[in-house]
Length: 380
Image 1 (cartoon, rainbow, N blue to C red):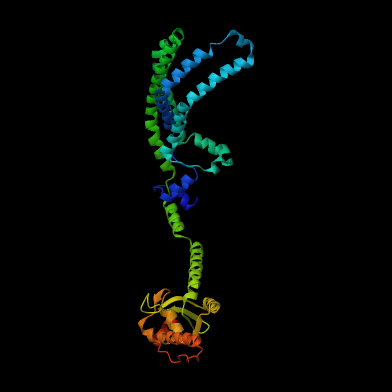
Image 2: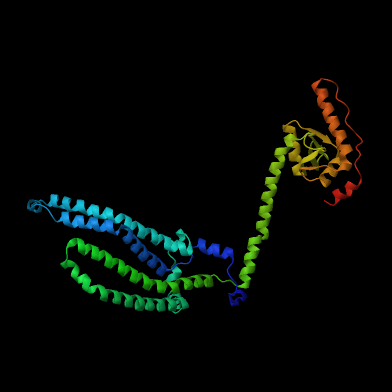
């Protein structure tokens, strides 16, 4: 047996474990609470809609059984007569049944929340295993269910017997009375029976609900190794981290390439490094690196710059220094101001010369780049 299987489940379930269990349809449920709420709902619905329902039944029983003798010889007419009153009764029952249906849904949601999982409808052949079936029969849950069933029979049966014994005489007298009074008495007896049965189920539910909450949490308890494995999984395995990092780099490069057309100049190595600079005196006091890269990324930057007619200026020491010292969307360091200013000044002069059809000014040749940047480049 493995080390993990030998460990006891002593740790409380994590939020991820609880969420995964919910997704699989494993939530807290109590049948006793559902039945209790349905009975209480029946009582509330009867109290709310009972008078109108009883009046409708009085009217139906009075008028539906009053008809001419000739109608008994016409099957279709008699059927139509009775169906008309039957539909009236069904419409009167809609509010009563609606309340019961609503509470039958509210009960499970109130305890375990809403959960729908289509996979629970799929057959599971492991449930057909007789050995596991026998193990479930003698499990703690099965014992509790047996005790609960016996207690429910004893408690509910005892209260039901007491109630029925007290109202039996009145029930037997109902057919002897006038129809209106009989229906009123039947409605009152129905409410009293609901109250008695609900009281009995309330006692059972008071024990069942705490047990279902404890049992649900007990089943989701975890070992220390499961906690460690979950933490590793949540933090991300190396291959997943690598895939996420690669995706992030692709998104970052895509955004960076979108900023290249806004640059004023691309300073290159000329092949290994490329740095795109933009200078806007309205935004900042120094030029900003909007894109940078080496090798294939540098080639892509030069390609985009060529497509958008962005000036590419070859200055290997300056390109390497900018690449090593400045992050994207950051201003260049102060000790590179003079060198970059000379390049930008030449770019702006060149634009004006081209616009005025004048001779192009000579490019700067000696750019003051501190030698300290060379060691930074070697450490990249």
